[in-house]
Length: 207
Image 1 (cartoon, one colour):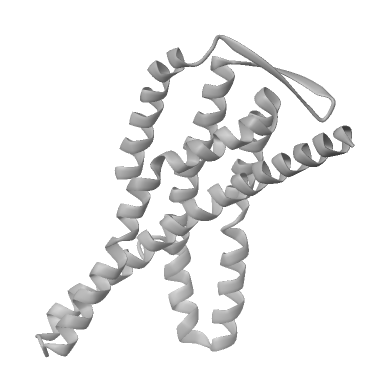
Image 2 (image 1 turned 90 degrees about the vertical axis):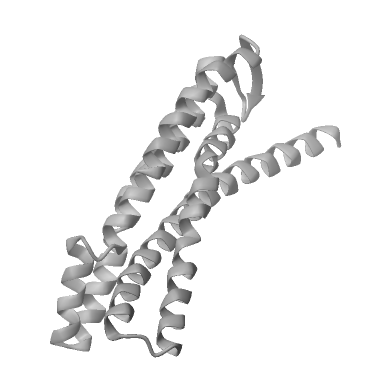
């Protein structure tokens, strides 16, 4: 719910921020002239913003013990180590399909509208919910420390059982934060590579 609310609020706040941008601008990249309007920049940022939300949901689905992937993996652990390894690898590979597809769509939309400048804007959009993602990420070590304190204090077994549930939820929230970090890093790396190529081309022209 925190991610959903943050994404919706950020999207709504993008609309009045468009008034601070010029009506349109043009620039050349890789032999093509891009005519970028306010709405093109909005589409690029919004694409990155909502892709981050989707990555968060997919990460939660594949790492939370309330959904079938983790539950099935837990059952395979009771069969043998081989089935655990095989199913774990399969889940790890399949968990990347949806994020890769949506990252590809985000890159395509933003690059079509504004070139690599649009890709950089998409990265900014994905990082727009970074404060709330880091806040969620902080839940993990807090719950883990609570379990350690309960263990060292020799508290009742029920306390440790409850802290284990909190720790499991903390592992999921930590994974969500990593999903945001990896997704935004992909877009930022692409934008930096484009900036490097542009710089090399400029240097070659000057020589």
